[in-house]
Length: 552
Image (cartoon, rainbow, N blue to C red; front, side, top):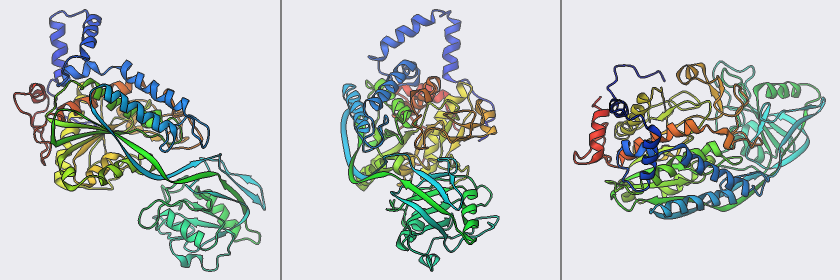
């Protein structure tokens, strides 16, 4: 999004700095040292008291602890350091967070739910074996769908509905109906074009027709030519795990296999996806509530604790560390609204933890939650500064995919603008992003206003974002400048470790998040469809907020 324009009023951070200079307070180190010794005992109920207590050292210590947990708990599936849901490293992470919050004086509970655990037990492989031999490069030419099994020397057979050459816009419905498999020879590998229905539907139809494997290639329209590794879900959107291997490929690979199928000797391929599947695997949400605050007016502060494909230090130990540190520094605060810090599991698998949590609430329980604040990736080296807005574009597509009623939208702008005010005060730009893909989205869907922060992951940072935030075009993290897809959401790289995070970014993003939490903790209209923060004038936070956020 473009930079916000217009005149800015002095921020309280600027006022305090100028006052310090005017009074000749040059002994900054001693002032900071004194402030730090006070953080554990003072009541950090305003931004001016809370923000100096959010320090890089404290945040980074949590990050180092999460890395150590991953290192000490390798995945039983692939042997790499892991904090994935359903594995020992995730449970150890949950236990660590729970203990820290108990020590800080919060009321802690651990909510258990179950899910279907899936993990790779080896590196998948895909190659053409005849009439010519060719190996396909993992994460470049192809990627595995969440499936299991192998096939050796399987003949590739295109199914019905393939549209080649592709039309200017999406028009293929290949593999979406059983009739597309009329005449399909059982035992062959089904070649299917993207488009028209969920990928899992295509795989289910192929399996029902007796296919030994599935290749789904990108459709070939503008913007739909590269590698897309899709999720597999049925017509109702429920995840499915086919018992035959499913490969996703670029359009170029798919077109080549299609062209060969039209010749007298079609291509034969070998495809292997070694994986383990365990239904009813336990997973956990860590819920920590402040002792003070009205239980009829609850502010949920959340981050997902689980990783995907490894240690998950950027996504999302960083966001987990952010809210953990904010919670610790607010341990002495008696908020007006009850604070409910939640570390969700299973976010990477489809928002499983937040879905289980929200589904467990009664209608009355839901009505008592006035707001949600979400921290999802807060330390990206080649960062963007994203502020969640229900009307914003999605992070990866750049288009608006969801809309919400005014009650949700207007109130969501309150914390949004608090974050923007902080970023303005430190001279940093921002972008607005939809909560789609984050746990905040689940709260919006049940009518609860939400905002939050993110700094981006994987590919690809564009020139406009470089103009706003500096850095390089390409991956937000990992090997930059590059378009190799990054570390986080790509399996078999195992590179989302501590070095994949920037402590400076983590610090200023955590301070921005802290401004949102401390102010929303005292907003007397948190339950209303208001787009203005409203505070009791007798509260300490009122004096600071009123100077920073005039009515827009």
